[in-house]
Image 1: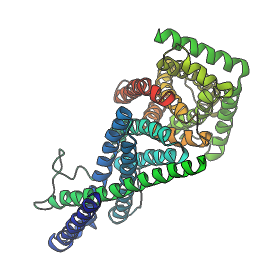
Image 2: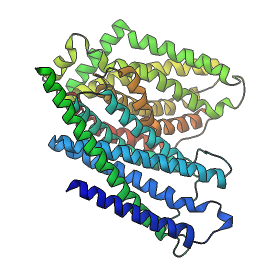
Image 3: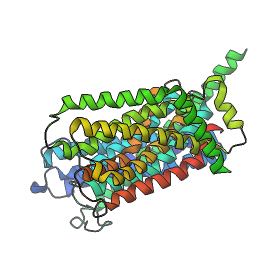
Length: 226
Length: 225
């Protein structure tokens, strides 16, 4: 059942991605004066997916602490890992775009800095998980860290925004001052959907891996006990 | 009950630290060394030092802080003192608050000494703005100790404790350190922090408040399970 769901979602993600790529590169106009602007259709959805992942990880961590069910812990671990991967995609695509638009690979602008800070925070989470061997202790401590991290995302985001801003001002119409040309904004959301499906597939595969590794672990312990 | 137990634990920690002076001496010496090293990183006599003096100071403080915070729970590992503390009638929240208070006092002391050394070495005058600087130091140091003490508890049983703590603590402290650096730089340049800067004071207060509450709630999960 679960296998089928994974394949189905993977197929949906692949179909959506192909359709989006066709629309982005074939249908949307080329605007010479905005440089490689089409990368925004991958850059922004990656950031959305990453941040949604961090929030879902918060919920999963809270659920683990409330129920003590290790299922939620492997879910939180999977979500965080995948979100971290999408955050990396966001940073890399942003850097490539910056090279074209600003002529530099990196600048200490607000959103770059806050994304990097979040990346470092969650990389710390992954390292903490690696450093603890006992599964329930690992689950407990990393759940607390995940909750702290998600709360801190708010602080990081707001305070760095007040500190410095060079990034293009809000692009999407959901925020004040944003808005792109007609028909230009929809692919961002469609691609977000595609990325979210893809992320879900990755998370499900990762969760099963975690589950299997726990089973192997307990079998090994049983074998040692004899 | 909570407050009284917290104060008892803070007094115990301070007493044992003042008798051995392990972390205190190390972090003081360390901060002086960093201050000396900074003199090679840029021209110490130049005017532009004013522009990043806040940043320098807070780098020194946060490096020195890691030394103090690392010891906070680690020193209770010997003879299973941590188990004894956890099983004592004092609430776990009080254990956390007491340790955080002791760390806060120790760090503030180290910071005051290095502030004086900084003023002396780099000819930075801070006396006129001493009280606002002390306020910023008190607020930002509390942010540092809350996060640091919490993560010190989180990593106390890890093999790689000394390595993990800075990796976890520094990215978390970025909002607080950023606010502190900004405020301190402005204060050292003789500006007031109640105009445009007051938002950073509010960031610090909010950071302190939110993470103290979270830590007191979750310390139970971390230490007891």
